Image (cartoon, rainbow, N blue to C red):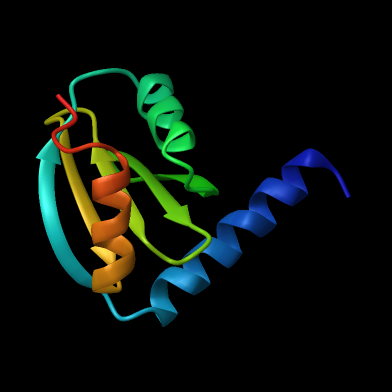
Amino acid sequence: MSLTNVNTTRQHVARFRARSTPITIVHMDRFTGTLEQLRDRVLLSGFYGDWIEIPHGHTFISEGGARLNWYPGSGKVIYQGKKFEAEALKQALGGPLY
């Protein structure tokens, strides 16, 4: 299986998990850094999962189902997922992201 097929499969799995999980918007923040800086911050928080590109932004979907949507144009960060998991992701990132 090529690397492209692996990434495509991960995206399909992430989309399926996202659709099959009840969504609750927990909190909104702002982040004005780069995608690489945000990815590093998520990785250092101890959460693991997949990043996918979405219209106008990027989404991180953790192994537990929490989601972080980031829209670089506005800097808006939206945490979604089951309430406990989404709140845990936000807390692990250490509060406001600015």
